[in-house]
Image (tube, rainbow, N blue to C red; front, side):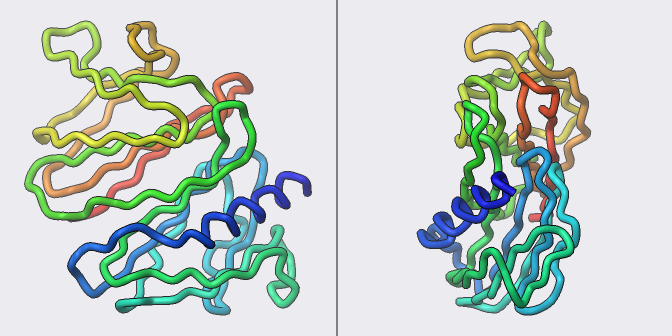
Length: 220
């Protein structure tokens, strides 16, 4: 219950600041990433059950709506009564918003939340975004490690992101402490196709074995 109450508090804080600048389009899109281990919840949007038993390591969405869309969001413990919510808030999305709210651990393992804008402008290349939202030190992402094609993306500290546009290919990568080449996670292999945004979330904790990479794919 303590973890749930902390999540309620941080979600309310993020809601209060709203979303970032909007792109030039009328539609509104939002996602929620659950990256706090051991904390399942039910999420209701505008009175409807949007995500039942929303488990850590999963993505809910998209929530779609017209320009200046508002969503009434209710969060309760799994099986809880939405008429008596632990959190009820209205999220306002300016026209053109495409955002992801991530509930996650900070670098010290405490629950927190971050709000990210998704760049969904068109490219025929691969747009790869890496978001560090795990209880872990600053890292670099190394693609094709140890080869002539090695590509280092970073550094990334908790709550930060970086984006690169790459040619379509199958990419093999590892995570390493910033400035080193010793893998702390991986390798993982991902085929990446042009005309898509791929988001890789580092979530969980390295110290307790819950660390994982969560992948999201969005058509541009």
